[in-house]
Image (spheres, helix red, strand yellow):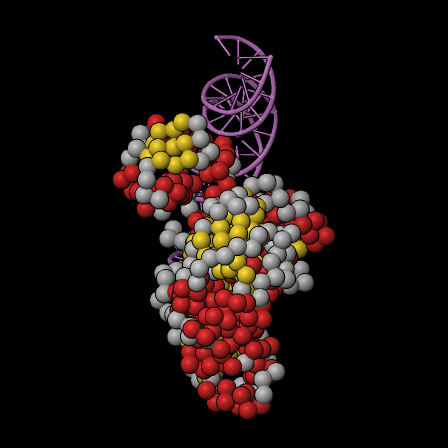
Length: 223
Length: 223
DNA sequence: TGCGTTGGGTGACATTGTCACTGAAGAGCA
DNA sequence: TGCTCTTCAGTGACAATGTCACCCAACGCA
């Protein structure tokens, strides 16, 4: 699964400003790995032993329950690092989060020794890693807040707008949306039908059209 | 609020193994702060500008909703560091978690400059900090799992056992338990009444006695 | 003893989750 | 064109949880 990319050290805040010498060394030590859309990047039975930085694509990190329900924790975008794997490596505890390549993905994996050396010697790299951790902690705080205190219709409206990425067409089954929010398909169906009755959206099989974004936004903001 | 403690560098995995020279320097640079039981250690309006290590006592970290509900995220015990403050310092995002001193607390605060230097120069210290982050990430994963997929009676049983710390007497109001789990007092009351009917516990005002721990444990494990 | 505060109980109703179904839309194929 | 299979969505009944508006009981204290 080895492939090549250009000088990826240019893509990361944590490596961009390193001296040329160090970056060349990194280019030599790191490996580039690819995943096809839909492939599992990491999971309970598949804990990588190196540190991962996402060069291109997007990874969806979600957690699943024993009963088969699922909730999306956050997404890792190009230029970010995926610290959850690191966290789990370090703490060696059981966990049931998994990362799925949401698009085709190219990632950089750095052997632990390189990572350690870099974290020790390069302030900007260390800062990058710390702030990656911080961001994920904050992401998770947000998830906890939503799940513990948020209303499902509000959360669904939010998610529809986010998944649309500015467009008005979303390709997603009710089941997929339920998996985003950690709820059941039936619940999503009910709420979407309500949205449709109120003229906020228009549904066809596997696809949702946002008809009234302003009002959806108002609903989403009423969190 | 300045006080003194002995050689606290002995208490932390991240500092215990440092050379004497470094530890002496730390003892000189760090400040010891105390909080009385119930005091807020940090919160949305009170973000410390230094790194905190807990020397004695316990801090309860919780998140609250606009509607006034609350949920406990995790507890910081002596010997651990409280990375959430660090995270928030770094990411400068709004958040609404707060830390309350659950007992009288003594903590070590390390100026950011000392922290940076230490993280750069001392492997064991850096490892300590990384693993502190990791542990909190894992803690939050657990919270998400519980809140998103767990049953309230199971979670309450779990929490009762945990709060008892091996004993059978718990001093806590229904409201306090609700704040542990991020639910409403009425829900806790209902479930506790059910527990009492089933002979699992015995309630008096502000106090709960665990009558049948084995069965509570069975319930808690049925997660 | 009376009174205010706090902790807890309760019923009605709204929201969300679960279960067991049904039916509808599309894909592939004779 | 029809047939069949799979996937996606709709539905009603019920359970669990959250919300609201109250009530009452226990305790602390003047």
